[in-house]
Image (cartoon, rainbow, N blue to C red):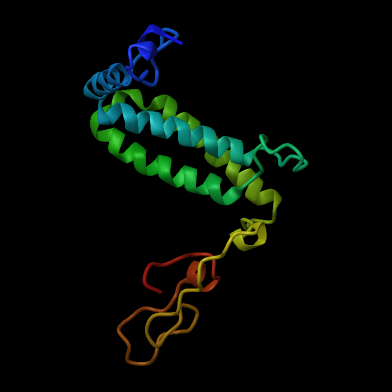
Length: 172
């Protein structure tokens, strides 16, 4: 029993074997928060997302090792999209330092495109991976994007990319 416990004082968590007290940890955390900038956090997040995306593109394991991540093209695509959005923000703050991030994003996009091509051009839907698929979106308005415009309509008809079903157009 320690002298502190014998004196009737409860031992605080973290005290004992030279560990910092809760107050010391809180003070260190607050000092770190005052030092770090949002730009630092955004850049670190972009690096983390690039790493996650690359990991999700890695060949799928045998499923026996839970520590080995499984291939997930949807997560890789989400990581790519998120990094692109973060790079737009970082462009305002540190444009001269974005070269390595842009290069890494480019390499990840190329690897993703190769994976899609090897699968026939379409990512595996989340429902096939045991996850729930998003509900189908209803067509807005009386026309669907693959139908020609109605006579007298001022809206142009779908172009070749749109009518092929490979181009997503907002609001349609």
